Amino acid sequence: MKKFSRFLSVILAAAMIVSMVGCGSTEEKGSADTFRLGGIGPVTGGAAIYGQAVKNATQLAVDEINAAGGVNGYKLELNFQDDEHDPEKALNAYNVIKDWGAKILLGCVTSTPSIAVSEKTKEDNMLQLTPSGTAADCTKYDNAFRVCFSDPNQGKESAKYIGENGLATKVAVIYDSSDVYSSGIFEAFAKEAENYSFEIVSAEAFTAESKTDFSVQLQKAKDAAADMVFLPIYYQESSLILTQAANMGYAPKWFSCDGMDGILGGVENFDTSLAEGVMLLSPFASNSTDELTQKFVANYKEKFGDIPNQFAADAYDGVYAIKAAIEKTGVTPDMSTSDICNKLKVALTEISIDGVTAKGLTWDANGEPSKAPMVLMIENGEYTIL
Image 1: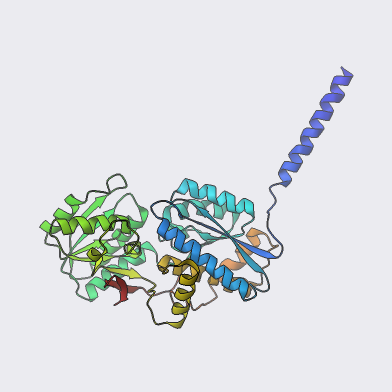
Image 2: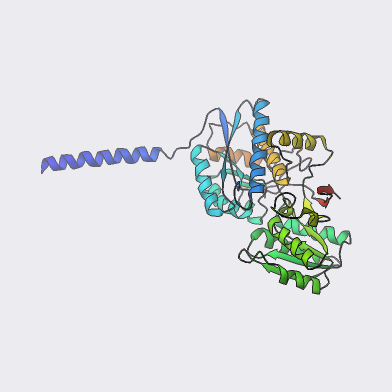
């Protein structure tokens, strides 16, 4: 019996040691001489054109900064994970980059994954800067910022531009009620439209389960004599709407937001001539004569063989904003994630950068950027600033 008791004591002691070792494994990983930057976005699936652009532009900015000597002498290292525009996969991706040692997150690319991950970054007090998550809740915590316009801002500015420029008298809206991005823009658009003389004559929704046949929505817009259709949706559904409208002989003006970016070259077998004349809000035009933009576009094209879209531009500015915040605070890679976040979230409200999406770009305490939208029109297969 005594032998058994001694044996049991040895087993319990060993278990305690294993438990202590296991607890020790929760310590933060990382590097003492490199800032590890995590990125999350869809590089496969239907929204891959957004995520791949963000991944490319983030890597371009990281490479440029490292080639110029880094940030306060420290290098940047990127680990970008695919979330396929799915919140559950985004959470898995966050666990991967956190386990790798990321202490700052540039992501997520789309709104729903970004909101899901923000619950985890809040728990860990990790700085989260989404380049393109537009939903209001993407920045509901004090550790979360965005580079892009918010959904309410896009909806308000769209209605304002249409009204102030007399672009339409009767407007129909087709939106995705199952998507926080689309419904958020629509709600702000409808509210702001009350201040102008144009009338919303039709507002028809679809959902993720019914996004291939838009004949009912288009017929209602046509029957209501809408001379403009507002599409606060993504380019994939927009391409179907433009095609189906053409087939039924309906040719209104079209106005959209940043989700339309991708309609040129992003949809297989789509006749891009149908997009001629489409207007959209954007913070970026690749054919701008601005010197910084021209340099960014040239470097991006040389490295990736493609023209950057606004998602790429927002990500590029995001990395340089993080760089400026690190330089201002003097944080170092060996600091804890939480200590880095506490310093950087204050610094982001104090810095100003000249980026490719805005000059004198700043952030407020709510994580919102100060930037004015541009309106682009598709002419001769290119985005032209109006």
